[in-house]
Amino acid sequence: MITVSDIHKSFGKVRALRGISFNAPDGKITGLLGPNGAGKSTALRVLYTVLKPDQGAATIDGIDVVADGLAARQRIGTLPHGAGLYPHLSARENIAYFATLCGLDKGIIDDKVSSIISLLDIDDFADRRTKGFSHGERTKVALARALVHDPQNIILDEPSNGLDVMATRSLRDLILKLKDAGRCILFSSHVMQEVAALCDDIVIIAHGKVAIDDSIEGIRSRTGCDDLEDAFVRAIHWVEPE
Image (tube, rainbow, N blue to C red; front, side, top):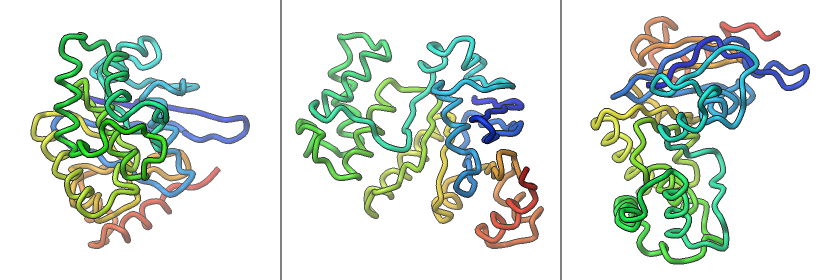
């Protein structure tokens, strides 16, 4: 379970987060939505320990992301915006290296890597250097890297960006399987169709604050909008800019 409590984060005079709070429980898919500049990426970076909040707290399975960042990172698999692969390593080597960093026993790494390569259907390019990969290929390898250590909590930043239709469908099936296995899944997306198809709960952020946090039906009811995109637009106008 991921818990965010009254997180504030500023960059100079820019207040990126102004006291956001929300929970992402196990066995559910929680969507984090907001317009560009709303604070979504800042919130995710706090959760995967790249940024320290100025105020407030965030926990991964009860582990404070600031006080014990290493332990928190061991409980999450992260697909950030931008794959960040090592270009001179093959896809398989990138995944295996990350498995090593996550502390997996050397005796099981090869089997774990082969299993996730098969699951995500990247066998055809698994042993090619990642330099020159298409965006979709890089995304698949980065996702494999995020899942190779079987994390309980999965944070995905626009996971379907750059994927073709078939790859997107496979990704959705995988996310639903992870949910059914009791994992906690938090992801951001700009694709409303994807959000409507996957999410149990949605947190909408605007101007660094939570505009609404509810189920899809709850958001439709509270905004008075049947169309999720219309509900999103109405909700973000509930938050006043500074």
